[in-house]
Amino acid sequence: MAMFELTGVRKSFERTEVLKGVDLDIADGEFISLVGPSGCGKSTLLRIIAGLEDQTDGSVRIGGDVVDGIRPADRNLAMVFQSYALYPHLTVFNNIAVPLRMRRLSALQRLPLVRWLVPGTRSAECGIHADVEKVAELLGMRDLLHRKPAQLSGGQRQRVAVGRAIVREPRGFLLDEPLSNLDAKLRVHMRTEIAQLHRRLAATFIYVTHDQAEAMTMSDRIAVMMDGNIIQIGSPDDVYDDPQDLRVAEFIGSPKINILEGATVGEDRALVLAGHRIPISVSEQAGRSISVGIRPEAMRLASSEGALVSGRLAHKENLGAEVLLHVDVDGQSAPVIVRLDHGGARSIRIGEMIDLTFAMEDLRLFDKAGRRVGAKAAQKELAYG
Image 1 (cartoon, one colour):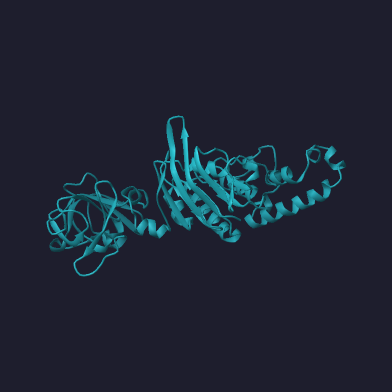
Image 2 (cartoon, rainbow, N blue to C red; image 1 turned 180 degrees about the vertical axis):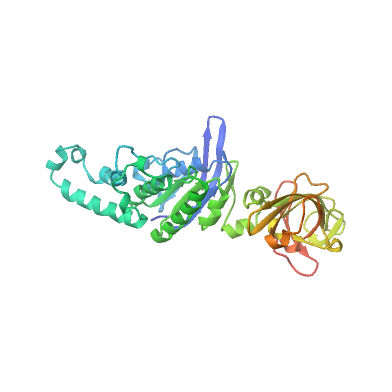
């Protein structure tokens, strides 16, 4: 296995700059996800690591070796694509065996009929057979080895594609949105399988996805990409709880974070929201506008006397154990989303007025440019970054 080091990686297609100087270190055996909206450059970055694209500037190291200009086959990396890319006329066994035969057999040993007359072919094929059987056992698909891709489900085909990558024993695995063609239920199942596979192999996984749920549930670290840059990198908990940019806060989390508009910094540096003075000191000049972020699960029902936000219930989403309330609040362009347990929301009816509150430490403040703003309570520090 290997560690990866990307330094100042840039990529331009004619006059369009797709990557704008990406720096990224990935530890040996780490599972890291590159996550971001479509067009942010994450797949291009993965292809540069794989050697399928040449960077315009910057350097890529794998295991301490500079690989710039080295062709993909010589980087010893395995790539799993969004499409399964299986050979339809070959069995599962032979699909998995393809990279081993390309590596271990000569051109003459790969020819039909003639191959068995070439010395060494039988012993090489015995080794290939043993390695394919071992991977099939690891992935729980020994009973599928004699089927062809048309006889498999989507999840089984993706498992074959992963098996073909594993059998090579590469220095790292590159996965480019491998679950996007699967239905929702199967995606959840395959997320678990891939995470468990990573733990068993202890290999380096670089995973590209636009689905933040995939990144949150599988990764050791998440690199959030926007507009060709990595704007925050950290553990799933760090990125969710401590976003350093408004774009990160809005992208990570489902339902997404509430952004309350119209807040300002008062003369005494306190936060003023919807006419309420919030007793925290904001590290911004008085009079500045502030965006206030608060996760739906941090909102709580309150009495009218203790309310910090009030509005009319416009919609309820019953998710079984939980309920999402969509509350129309004066001065806000989007409904405020509140996540409650089913019992707490049972008696609330559409059209009712609702009073809401929240803990001061659950607020995430951002300036006009979307950068995180520090804040502290009057007596003790709060965890604002």
